[in-house]
Amino acid sequence: MNTKKKENNSRHHLQLARDLASDKLKAMDLADVVRKAGGIFQEEDADMGIIRIDYIGKQVCIVKPAMTLTCELDDWAELGGPIKLREEIFILHYLIQASGKLPTGNLIPFRNMDGGMTYESIFKARAVNRLSGAFSNREELLMEIGKRFGGVPGDMGSVSLRLRVLPHVELALVLWKGDDEIPLSGNILFDESVLDYLPTEDCVVMAETVVGRIIRVFNQNIDKESL
Image (cartoon, rainbow, N blue to C red; front, top):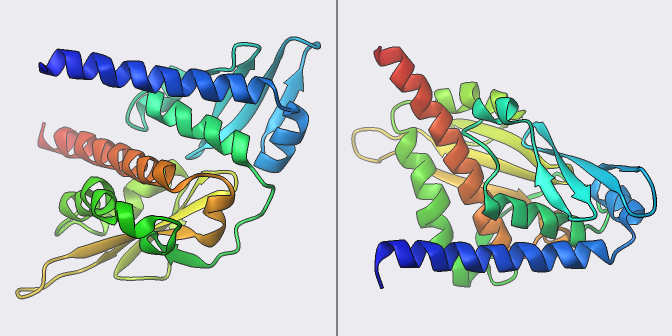
């Protein structure tokens, strides 16, 4: 199968997943959903309304009845570009699964999640290793870039960033400085309440997406410095 066909098939599957999630959300009590998810619901009438929810420091809107996601493109240009389809899917899943439980502050590694051992190699390749590779010898810049996403300093490793991805979903990106013998290493930890909001597979996508956005902003800064 050629690359173009693979891309088309992949997008088709993502669109199906998005449509299924949208249909499921339509059938739910949106006022209750938003209360549990930490968002705002502005109902215009029985058929129309807007869900407003924060995502990595910026607001996104899900418009009823289609349940399509919209955002201000200018806002997202500085955070690595517009919302992707995969992000839209896990934001919808977050709303659907929201329990109302608040983050506990207790961070756990990915392997401790349900099925985490099964996906751990994928999680490391797509998120942790990319994070470590991008900030090797420049780990102090993680905090500088992370502030644009609403991140705050953590208290782990050599450098760590606490990030509220969605209202009740928090991550910690952690880097440990290397030396002549040991290379820089990293990890991504999750508040233990995350599975009240997202399945394990979505946690992989969420971490990968957040790291990807941070790296894109980091690279944009490097490009500007080289001009």
